[in-house]
Length: 612
Image (cartoon, rainbow, N blue to C red):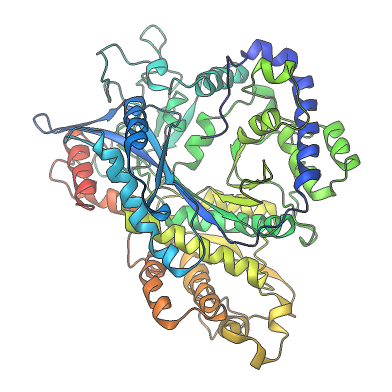
């Protein structure tokens, strides 16, 4: 959700005038905060997740599903219920929050999870409680659905407005919180042009040739015709078609800054394969498309770059371009310059005591223009506050985020993993959350090294967005040199449970990256292949042994790890594969790429039945 912005946020015209002062304030607040928190230590491995749900209304008489714009009503009712509710066990608490679109609700555990097995086994139950809590405030024909992108989003007439049947507009669909309203307006004002995102159509036997999508979205009134179409592509022409997408994010607390920065860097390399394994977006604007994830569409719809910046500056919503650990290997940087980069910002951070990798990371983010600020924060500037810095930092959306402690008594140094798409069931969402947590612990405890060059990372992120990428694409991954020499150079009798995976690693071989399938990354390469990678699931299993997890507890976790393993092998389909199969097997599908209202209705009903 990001930090709240109290009062009235500044317009884009006002932001342009105060941007230099605001940037300077953000830099000074960051330095003050970093100096207070750089020696912070939090040994408890707390963690949590957040899931965004799509609110859907089903009309059985018309066999039609629409998006329900009812976020505020749900949050009001939940607040009243919490005031009256009896206390529940901390592990069963749930927290609901607003999100950008009124057809979304974000839900998290009320308290962070711990690291013992009982905490891991409670994750699925907590997710189920969140979904049921939202459902309590809806009528029987309305549902919170873990759907990444509503299949008809972008067509007109796809919303149910509880208050009135007014014509759909961006203002009605956007959450009324000032942060979201002004952020949306300022993103559009800065880019100086309308949103233009093109997705290749999935060409079936009867798909129209040539194919042109000439329909405009709800965001543009009739007097403004759609932009120029692109043959063979579905056309997204509004910011609401990207920022209203749902995902699952997982956040891990590290022991200290050094370990958080190491974990941050290793998570970066895991982004592409985990995006591909959770792919859940095979449809846009009522059409089957030839991609299967939201990532590129969200990036393009959030894009605030001016025409002059398109060739030189990455989007605000994008994959990471900086590694930040001081232990990172050499020669990983991109061949392209790191932009934007305000050299005076970088130098001030260096002068303030930051090392080069961390200063580069923060300078890259703080060099962007602010898109939402409150005048009061500027006029009543407080060096020991974090308001200006936090708003700057939270409006650059990379696939992995380092989270500095904002208070002395709040959460410590954390890493947020952001690329995964929301899954269709509580069990699958819990499986990916638990797997990523256990992998984060293995990385931290065993100092695992998954670095890949930044340009190879970018190539992998592009591959991850292709249709059926989980089975048909390869991703750059470190095959050798991934295991800590500290662990592998111990005498074999001292390696404890880690021997099974670390003994296969060539700690003294020259580190190298190769293109591996998702199956090879997750389940391991053929052990007969020299220097074969053992697979991330096997590393997690070895970590459970290394940490002396009782055998019975390991068995309880295995069903969740099996989901990850079987997704990678193809034994279980991704949500995108399942949805595509449902559509193409439906009796009303005409093999023309179009997914009509009846097919969408039946598919969403089937998703709802999965949890009944």
